Image (cartoon, rainbow, N blue to C red; front, side, top):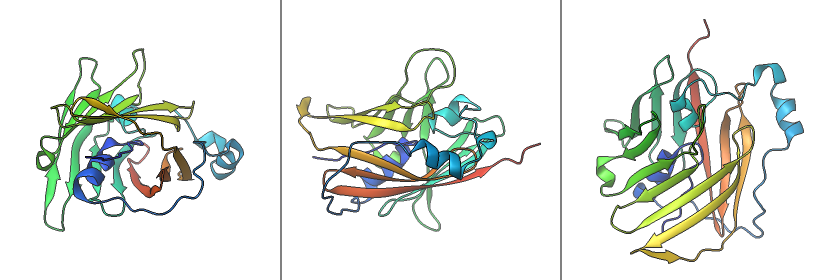
Length: 225
């Protein structure tokens, strides 16, 4: 079994990709080292006074969302869209996967003892679950690790390193099959190409060896009072 997943901003889009379709593949001639969007380009696109890289709540930090977000929808080719909904205090109220025009599936999610989401599960994906890990310390934090596991010895763990804006700068992958580590030295590159006025990324391209796919986020906000 070999399932390479990437959990940028939301592990849920990874789950949808893994369980419900093959990723789009294209030949990558020379994958580059991971790099963030040039600072000058970001500042040109987003007026500095409008961008605050501070999380409004822990649940919004879990999904790497700035501002008072009402919902975020993740889309990717060959995957079912997933929408995360929040109330006006920034807490998750639902995680929904749209299977068809008439069929939707709600995920089960659980918190750890410091009120961070650490477990996400769709019944149709059983026994596979998503586990989130965080660094210790004060303040709202985006996850450091994402693990897709069948809970019986098979898993893929992804460790993320971020810059001061929350963008991923480095990814470490570890795959275990039947309790044995699988060696995988193919390079990973991530390119962010769109941001909104809150500083949230809207599009990213992820490349791993010869595999490449694009993720898109559609974000709605509560009206500022």
